[in-house]
Length: 224
Image (cartoon, rainbow, N blue to C red; front, side, top):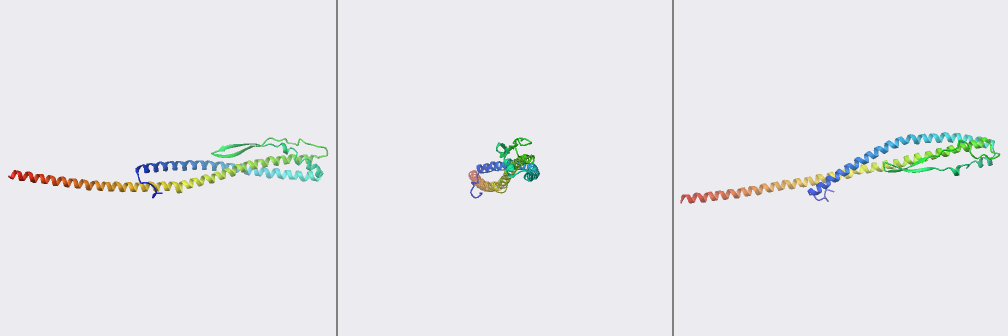
């Protein structure tokens, strides 16, 4: 960049302003990255807890399912396989987290027991249906936390790349421009100073010669 920039004082001022802007931008991005990292690790705990909850309710639900299949007919079990699932609605909103759009899922409350209890369906099948409602709820929680976690992680990577680009490419490039401009301006100033000294010396020599000539003329006139 130094070879393409005009080494003038206005360019020096512009480069200093660009350096200030780039440095400020890097600081802002680093603060954003640090805040996102804090959110990321806090969310990891929630994601692990959601996974653990899903694992627990799944084990219980499949135990109930095996019991239902052992005591009730396949038709009875299938009759409750999707009971209530079509009415299961998820309240999802998009929130802005340090410029990152992440989902915010509110899991609706569900009945502790199945509302559908047809004839010839045993208690174990109804319990299995209720337990799998808990599995559905746990899946929604896992999906919400892990989607949020993934998007924050992607933004951390993107922000880190931008910080690295500023600190390792942009800022050093601007600093190199500033050093180049300063070196050229300093060289010009030294050359101008040297030129001024030469001109001053010539003027002084010319004045000295003129004074000596005048003195000689005056001395000759006095002798006559």
